[in-house]
Length: 304
Image (cartoon, rainbow, N blue to C red; front, side):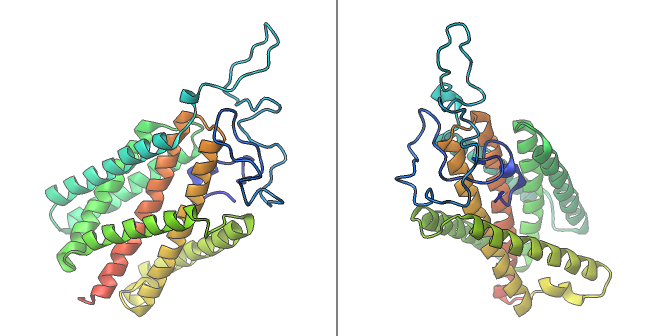
């Protein structure tokens, strides 16, 4: 199944250009992720017909590897420096999330809590959404576009975090801790193998996620037109808390898909530039979790 983040559904993060196939052979020179060590490999519903999208059997050559037509020698895999590594993903993620943090801190420090600031936050969120959509439909990762998205997203988060903090003191700090806890716990259970990212798991999760987004969209329209008072399903009471908890569970689900598809990209020799897409996708998921955690902290603070 494609990731919750549309950037991960692109070439490079999917072993069969759409599904995370687990029984394809890994990139030549890359980590050994064969069927013997992979519990999902035997009879996996993700099993691709064409194998590794970065490999052209029988030489496990990526589409980026040079041909040696003069001597007729078997094509070789590209140098390891040209392939994405986990260090690349970590570094790009640090840059992207760091830009979000810097934007948030500057917005918090320079913009007072006021209606005009709220308008700026909405404008920044819309710009960030447009930039995210543009990057999603681009064929290649654009670091400038991704970092611009992160900067505007940071402004939005800084303004709403300051507003929440003015009413529920300490809520943003608690939301950050909660986001870190959910991310760490999800990574732990994923690495321990307690969650199996199978086709059925992904289909069920994505069906629930799509339904959740559609219901929230309808709820927003009802609130805007005054049909559903006090935020409707997103109020600051018990119902809002239940919806918020469900949103956090979906955020953790998105993380498991993201982790798996990043792991696939590293094991199967995705181009190094694709690490920017990994950072972009993870940033969107973490922003989702932080916003939902911020609301949940405010609800449980009970000071409204």
